[in-house]
Length: 69
Image (cartoon, rainbow, N blue to C red; front, side, top):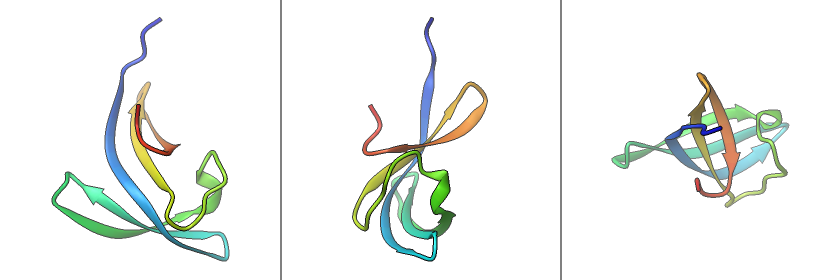
């Protein structure tokens, strides 16, 4: 079975405070935007400086850790 994955955004964790992650998210490679996410949305343990991506798989957005493959 082939599953198509489209990476929409890439990001870098800036800080983690009280289960809220502040990250700089690269929107179309033009300029980084600061965004806030609940820490429990990440499928891995994250730390300041970690990279992540947001992709669209099977009709739903998904957060992945590291760089997109």
